[in-house]
Length: 304
Length: 336
Ligand SMILES: Nc1ncnc2c1ncn2[C@@H]1O[C@H](COP(=O)(O)OP(=O)(O)OP(=O)(O)O)[C@@H](O)[C@H]1O
Ligand code: SF4
Ligand SMILES: [Mg+2]
Image (cartoon, rainbow over the protein chains, first blue to last red):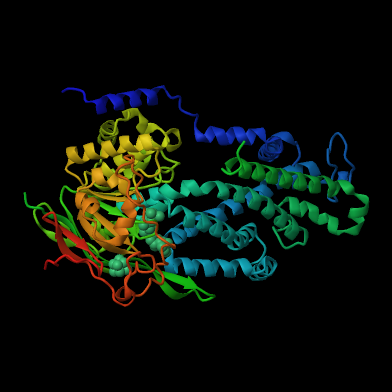
């Protein structure tokens, strides 16, 4: 078959396309942008250290966080007890390490689970619209407007204090924010032409919204997960300090801090509450740095 | 050869509710498409022209049921002359027709999913329509990529690695992947550079020939349509105001609105230059279209009747061809 001028033109275009060097992957751009953010990297490093330290707590400390040792009560920090000991002679450093496990588990776990609930509802309702969306929106408003502290008091008095009750409350009050975020993203994404194209093939709603659209809504949700983690950790500390959070026999950062309720301890034994307070603040700060870094690096309107 | 319909639209209307107030009550309707009768013939290229906001995209989407028509019928006629009314079908019964009717979109930037490779986003439709082996899906997509002058390997790349023209060709691949009969090309080239426009248009025409396609070619630019389309429908405020062979539209224009659109086409040939008819005012809101002829506030020829009586689309004959137009001032004999 003879080559027409049209074919030749196309051949030329083809060649040009082949020569054109393709830009690197989008994902690596986000990573490099994140790594350029000093605070975020600093946050990530400290965050990782704290998490690893609590995970490998038994290797780092020879003490048992629960064992009472009345011979070494209220000792100031020393080489043997880095953060000193508490009123029953337990090693504070060890307790902070083990407390981190529970506190971080509560914070991260609640944030991820409320994101899962929020995303599951938000994606579907945002994409479908109509009465499902109206109902979901109202329900989320009810949950979000309900004061957390009253919910905690209610649940504690009904079912008693437990780690899982606390997480359940965090998820109940936290999913609304995630839901709204996911819904808002879906509302704008559903008008995109690739979504219309998928609909024109009659693909199922589930495939379209959870498989094809959700990946494009994830970055603001990831940011929100980090920020909620920080918030939940702080709330847990606050509630435990008041004696409403996790049962006192489980070491958490908040429960360790709880001893500072005693004015005697607050005034005379700074090591029982000072270091743990610092660890909470540093950890929360680092998580926030990471969140900000994530937000900046995934935000397409902030170039550079 | 007898012309056979592939799609028959009867009194198609698409109204979007306008909501306002605390209680989100419906206070009015955007009459995006307001009573369209149109036959699309197998194998033709039918142009659909009109200013921005006149309802072209909405009509195209209504055909595919991407928006639900408020009223009217869309009937698909198969090669064997079986007629199926699409708008009354259950969603799941639409599937066999979704294969036959496809769409190419305007905006190359939002037409591909940024999180998936080309293969990743195109394989689900194939899977749904029974192409079960991965090799086969890769083969189909690869072959089509080659048919639009791209390399097979591109299927494993992400959309951001492609230029606008390439993305548009990938959009065409997507429309073609289930072997459709009719493709709605919604301003498929308007977002592209002029030089690339020509390539993509030529490609579309080549594909039409190779695959026996029918196109509904939506555009706001009448200068492209003349060479491309067999017939052209001109739309104004959700209605078709003129419909005829494309040659007749330029030579024997009947409707004052089409006349204004045609006079606005820039001409290279200075001798041919006609006086440009400048339309005054904006397109009226489709929420409250004017009474009488919807075009009368801007029509340079408007008379008193135009303000009160709505003209209907009537059939005339120019050059021996059917020619539909809706205007009170046409002094040709109407054909029944
Ligand atoms: N989902 C929607 N909800 C409400 N109004 C809509 C919706 N989609 C379109 N419209 C309105 O319907 C009218 C027709 O829109 P449409 O997109 O069909 O115009 P168009 O002819 O394709 O214009 P363009 O050339 O700009 O693409 C416009 O007034 C638009 O505002
Ligand atoms: S009916 Fe009247 S207003 Fe409408 S297009 Fe014809 S002349 Fe103009
Ligand atoms: Mg449009």
